[in-house]
Length: 250
Image 1 (cartoon, rainbow, N blue to C red):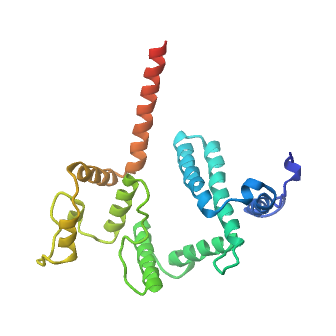
Image 2: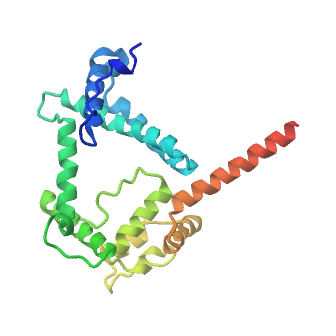
Image 3: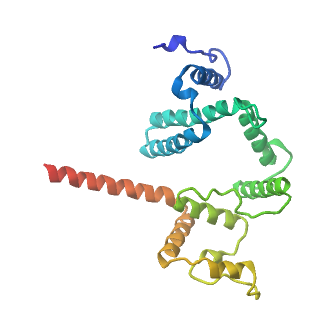
């Protein structure tokens, strides 16, 4: 088994980020030299991307900065791994880790005109508003249509996070606050055949579902992330049950 001296090291005397280049080299060696790594695909790796992200959140919640750093490394590995798999495609759909980095650099530069351009902002709220406006313009340019303010929000995420993301995006876009009250009819602006009225009739929401959705809104209004708050409560309950189990065995 190789020791640290066998691993490539480009960081000595170089700028911050040099070890990222070393990680790319290590990934190349794994992809060509390890049977398990060599057979992985985007699809087979997908569960690990989700799992490592959750583990990073757990480490952050634990308050252990070293554990969080380690888990961030695992998330980074997934990004580099997927890019390495994509780089092998020869059908015109492939890309490299440099393409991934270039994409996010271009996006950040484009969406921060107050940093990389001559736009002046009054504070963080205006930064958010500009970000949303630029993002909407990008979607319209890509599709040729105006699209929805909610485009791009992944519906597969946990329900509480999804509710929060939808509410946050809609609020920033200026959607009427009463739309979040799922127990009341959707305002139809006098047109009973409008899309809003049709949505009101089609989307049946249970009382419990409406209450949970409203609770997510209350948490946001209090400056809290409802997903993280529920996770914290779940951990507290787990600790209580485990303490009960230990006392029952003693």
